[in-house]
Amino acid sequence: MLRSDPSFTRLPSGDQQRLVQQLHQVDQMPEQQRERRLARAEMLERMSPQDRMAANLAAQRWKGLPPDRRAPMANAFRDLRAVPPDQRQTVLNSSRYQNAFSPQERGMLTDVLRAEPYQPAQ
Image 1 (cartoon, rainbow, N blue to C red):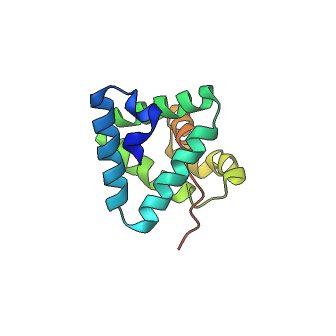
Image 2 (cartoon, rainbow, N blue to C red):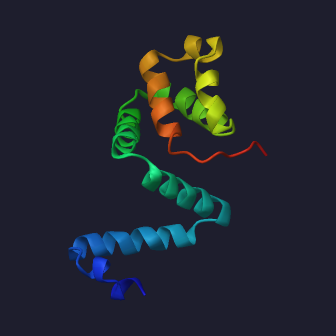
């Protein structure tokens, strides 16, 4: 079906191959992980170009964090995705997060969480 889509066939062959590989990877994921990935992709599509760029830049900056900062950031990210989106900024501005993270780190969390679907704690 994808291979007959005109927008797909107009892509360079390398892009086509990468897209097919990505779709295969998503197809192989456990259902819950796949649903989260698809929900995140939908959220990114609905974002303004500026917000989408901010989320992508924050993700790139995150990769450049020293290893000793990545673990606490990942823990905060997991905790905050269990917070309803309209309450995340309030939690990020709490003394707990202000004491644990720099303003730049809290900004990164804010930007990447804009594209993160709500995941209630289980």
